[in-house]
Amino acid sequence: MQPIALPIVEGKYNLKNYEEAYKTFDWSEVEKEFTWYETGKVNMAYEAIDKHCETHRKNKVALYYSDANRDEQYTFLDLKRLSNKFANILKELGIVKGDRVFIFMPRSPELYTAALGTIKTGAILGPLFEAFMREAVKDRLADSEAVAIVTTPELLARIPISELPTLKHIILVGDADENDQGHISYQDEMSRASDQFEIEWVDREDGLVLHYTSGSTGKPKGVLHVHNAMIQQYQTAKWVLDLQEEDVYWCTADPGWVTGTAAGMFGPWLNGASNVVRGGRFSPDDWYQTIEKFNVTIWYSAPTAFRMLMGAGDESVKKYNLSTLRHVLSVGEPLNPEVVHWGLRVFEKRIHDTWWMTETGAQTICNYPCMEIKPGSMGKPVPGIIAAIVDDEGNELPPNRMGNLAIKQGWPSMMRQIWNSPEKYDEYFQTKGWYVSGDSAFMDEDGYFWFQGRIDDVIMTAGERVGPFEIESKLIEHPAIAEAGVIGKPDAARGEIIKAFIALRNGYDATDDLLEEIRNFVKTGLAAHAAPREIEVKEKLPKTRSGKIMRRVLKAWELGLATGDLSTLED
Ligand code: WTA
Image 1 (tube, rainbow, N blue to C red):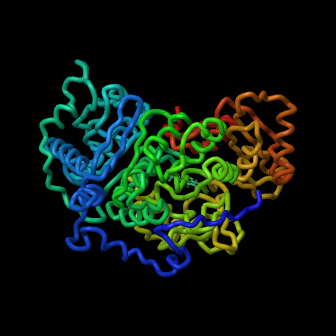
Image 2: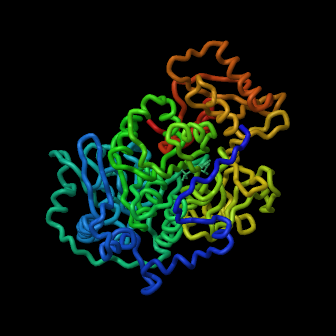
Image 3: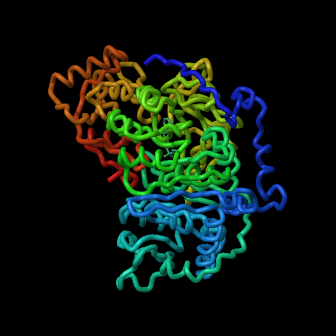
């Protein structure tokens, strides 16, 4: 698809002139916002919650929570008091600064309370997706030597307590039965704990949150972020999310994923924003209802969700009043141009793609409300960030050449450790001062970055380098296709051939005619060499919990190889 620049929509944005800010901005400008500027010490939970209780925001709603059974709201003062209580529970258990405390439960006010309370004690927060099974839970708790976990009676069976010698405390949220004797009851302890707590003031380089993320090989790795990340999380929430005082912000991500902490808790609360959290599973009606019910103005989601909404059809969107929406964003995988055009049509809003990684700790390359969007492009680096396309030696490549997407080392929210694995950490920083992301991309002559694939996903077919994303985007423009994942399959003649895995929309059958039509569709729409030689139809594609199509799983299926670590696989 040819890039069409989508014009800027007029508005009073926090970031008014991208080029200007890019030239002049310095991160040190943000440091004045936080306590360490005066005291040398800081704490994320203070900056995100308690601080606002000393201002007009004290009784502002910090959290709107709803699910099928609950509908609640909490002010900044409520969250301050509740998290103080939880911090007191941990303190009485002997939890101290630097201890790893995990939270393994569905999204709920208790999850956010426990997360903030944990941070107040100076402990490192380890958030886990509720869907993790026993092996995945064990790997993470063992690697990090977690001392405590907050979970629910339903999930308790997935924690192999006897195999985790360091795990001393289990705090259960919800009605425990007789099997759960010996564990700590969240409700009982909260009802007696004091709501006053002396925050543990930490250094800005002390550990804050440990996110386990899967690489292409081996066990998941624990990416450690420190309190200093607040500089970038605060500033990008201002510029990229464009949070302003009156906004109601909904980030659909679970805190098990970096998006759910950095952009779902820290960034918005550092800015004193009202945050919506919707519990339960995804359904189009439910999501549209959430926007309508809370008058959401800023909505941050992921391509996989947008594609599912798109698949649900225009009828469902038309049932709801979504007119409060003013800013829509996406992260996690490439945002197909088709989805951007759909967003324009049904929401009358541009969907702003943002690129970042667990390792970058905050948004890094983005589209801003004050900037033209080229559908399919991830945008431009956040002011203060230097990004480039480099070759394998770390030399910068000229525009329009595909290479390694790299970030100049030293951005504020950069990961500070891979837990227990300094060697692995160092591997990222070997190339002339660049952090090499593992993504391949190119930058066009206007400075926009275009994602091409993970390095190991790039397909080399008959001498042509082809990014799988481009083909996937084309495929899902076809009316029969709901989802597509593309891999290179080794081939004696061509190096690799392109193989597409697709899931069809309701009402379509996988006939030979249809597959031939799809092949031609790519051939005529994109390029002959980009047309998949093989197409396999699947019920659904393997995806991570954060919505990324797992091409390495498709590839492993295809080649009959082991799939590697699957703990982040959805269902
Ligand atoms: C991919 C997510 C294309 C990319 C916050 C990156 C994207 C990995 C985009 C990090 C985007 C993320 N366009 N690809 N806008 N955003 N990715 O650690 O391959 O879950 O390296 O962090 O997701 O995923 P992670």
